[in-house]
Amino acid sequence: MAGPASPHSLEHLAQRYRNYVRPADYLAFGRVLRHLRDRTAQLKLDPARTVVFELADPRIDREHGRYAFGLVKEFIAGGWSALLAKSFWYLSSMERKRHKRLLLKEPVGLFETPPSQQLELLVTDREPSPLRAHFRRTILLDYDSRLGDGRDLPRFPYRPHPEFDAEPDLGDEGRTYRVAFLGHWNREHYDDERDLAQFGVMTRWRMIQTLLNTLPPEDVHIVRGSEPAPDSARFLLSADEDLPDLATYRRLLRRSDFFLACPGTGFPLCHNLIESMLMGCIPIVQRPELTGLSLVSGKSCLGFDGARSLLNTIGECSSMATSRICRMRERLRKEVMDGLAPGGALAWLKNGFPEDRRPLSMFWFER
Image (cartoon, rainbow, N blue to C red; front, side, top):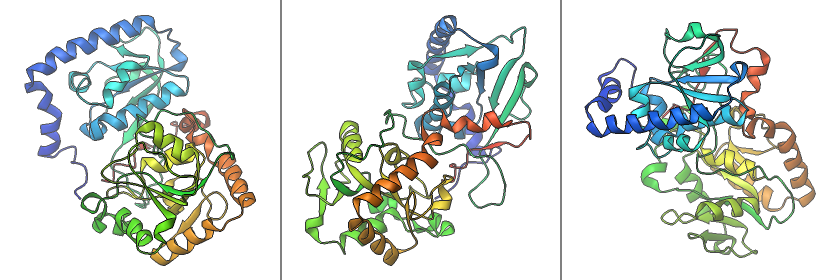
């Protein structure tokens, strides 16, 4: 699968200026401006806790604006007042990007006129940025770094899907299912080995097929839509053509001990890894070191490195004592959850970043 467009490519330029030839976008831009101005008037801005987002690269708008939403939402959850820089390109598409438009429901304002005193933080993907002089600190976003490329950059972590919206729940009680995978797994989208070969991981489709071809049929329950799963089910697998709704998805995760953390499309991580951990599932994951989290196989996750290893790992968790599962979940809670809770990804701001001038890597732009 091809990677993101270069900032200087024709594809990038087409994405960048497409909005300027859509008459409807001019109307949308006006509506969004009015909305953000109204929100700005309602915000109580503290210059020391105000962050402005100056986003100009089309790559931040991929996946219907999901990554832009996750970035801004993280700062809001961390107690920051968030403002969007006035930009026709960025704001005119806000209503039609189904994840980015969720920002219109958040306490987000508009940055139009530089203030008389410096604000605390600018987050930008423009270099050089014309706004930098108005801020005490600047975070430059980097979309080009890759996992394993040797660049030692701070990484903004993978976040839950914008629509997941659930408080962490890592309780031990009420977990009747041993292992779950609840997501798409069709071969058309989830069996491209070319992009995953560099990471040495199996594709999602091959992981699921390995289990379906080996596990006793009575141990596997196919979840269709919002239908209930029997308490006797050991391995829950969603029907690819009929995924559970969000409420059912959260409920089944909360009742499962382990989650099979399959890779995404061309990338070794997926948002369902984070969502399952927020619901207290211990991840079964290939190459835990790729997650960027403090996962230790046998302590806070179960790692594996191939088909035979996967089967052995499933067998291990199937027979694992409840007391050990509870100890692993407690380790997961202590070591990982501070960074996964809403706003937790901003801990590096307290440690002096970005005075070292290194960009913040949005490393999940692998695809």
